[in-house]
Amino acid sequence: MNKKFWMSCLTVVMMVSLLAACGGKDNQTADNTPAAGGEGEKKEEKVTFTYFNAAAGKDKNTNETTIGKIFEDQTGVNFKMEHLVGDENTKVGTFIASNDYPDVIVPGNSIDKLVGAGAFIPLNDLIDKYGPNIKRVYEPYYNLMKAEDGNIYFLPLSAVVGEYTSAPNIEQGAFWIQRRVLKEAGYPKIKTFDEYLGLIRDYVKKHPEEGLTGYLALTTQDKFFALTNAPMHLAGYPNDGGIIIDMETHVANDYADDDITKRYLQELNKLNTEGLFDKSSFVDNYDQYLAKLTSGKVLGFFDYRWQVGQSMNNLRETANASGNDDLEYMALPIVYDENIKNQYLDPPSFVNNRGVGISVSAKDPERIVKYFNNLLTDENQVLSNWGIKDETYSVDENGRFYRTEEQITQTNTEAFRESFGFKYFEYNWPRYGNGSTLPDGNSVGAGRQPEVAKMSYSEPDKKLLEAYDIDSFSQLFAAPDDRPWYPAWSIPIDQGSPAQIFTQKKSDLQRKYFPKLVLANPAEFDRIWNEYVGEFSKLDVKGYEDLITEEVAKKIANAQGQ
Image 1 (spheres, rainbow, N blue to C red):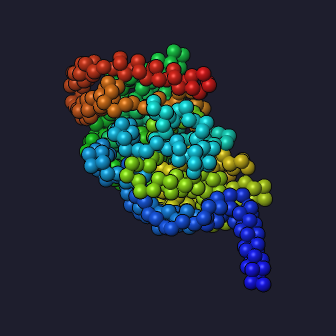
Image 2 (spheres, rainbow, N blue to C red; image 1 turned 120 degrees about the horizontal axis):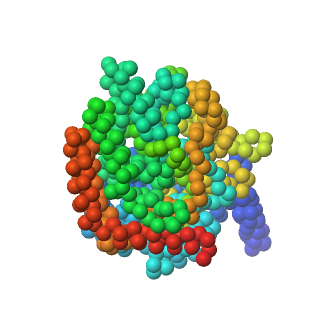
Image 3 (cartoon, one colour; image 1 turned 90 degrees about the vertical axis):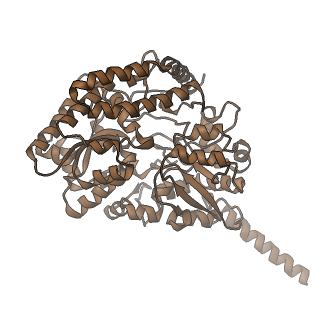
């Protein structure tokens, strides 16, 4: 009797387990929130791993955020996140010297250094065993991800899944100008750098008692590119990273000694002479730079939206509270001359020299790969980008995701983004890249959903769009031309190679001479420029350009399946 009883119980338990495992896609609950346990895996003992992100940010445990706590419930895994303080190369150098690394590392420019030092474990076998979702997302890009030895050492952050969708608003680089400058000038349609600077000069002249800064630049540590990249955009090229690729010949040219660079620095020199350039640009740290943008005193600057997002969000909060958008910025596709077609918007791309890797010090790589795999379900990508249904986003009768005004205000607030986890999980983890779409046609990124973009616009936004006769801010910019190699800055450069030595020496030279050129007496500018060009010509620029040209050809061949 007892034997029959226990057999009956066992049958019931097995049936319940089977029904639970089969119920719903990816173990999804009725309200579209992923349930604990991920993809039907048994729950394991909770564990905390260390995670280092080579970008500035607030240190936090992932389970102290709403999103991170859900992921911990699913996988039993928490990460203690540490962000960069100081110089990235110095910090990474300390890791390498001690051969003691955090479990997970998201490097910036130092990624080649870490790979060269053997800091990352190969992921190929772990993906095959524990990462079906990782393979689904990344396998189309394997030919671009593998090192020369055939191993995959990190997972890039740019793998597009589904149909590509462009951004309605500016996410990348632009010349930014305060909206009050445009308002006072009657919303002029400007295109050239001279026109842009003319607006700034006129506004400062009309408001001499307000202590305004005409133009600010970011030059700190690993963000010096915010200064050096501007000339290529002004010349009508996208961000290929200190290099210009000819559209016809695909030959690479380092423009560091070209007239387009001289022209930009000479204009900044003029601004400085007129008292319109902030001299502290060459000594301010990143936080000081962001604080100045938030202060409302800076009229114009060049930078990338993702690098100034904190300031932009703070200004938007202030504008929403006051109903006055004067201190917010508008992105403009400024170029040198009228006949130049701007190329600020990124074409579809795959960046294969940035990503997240598991270090040789990791205590349990299998658990980490399982966590990464769990991130890469459609449901968890929705959670990472949209949040929780009926809390941070809504769904209409046609299945389209949208956000109400209240949800948009809430999800754009920095404090909420931190506590909920958007600030941590939208990027810097294995993810569906920018421009990805879900099988139902919704955008993975909330900011690229047309319904959200339209609802996000404040009344002042709408007036600005109307003044420029556009429906979204990106419509002011030219569509990107097809560039199969894009971006060239994602071409891996081996540590200690002639190309890497060249880029380091070039950077050192620019850090030495560019402040001198901008802050010099105008009568001394040409002499200092010629001195700089003389020093630059001693570097192996041709060797570097030849390497990039060769690698661009390979990327084009890979993109075309050759």
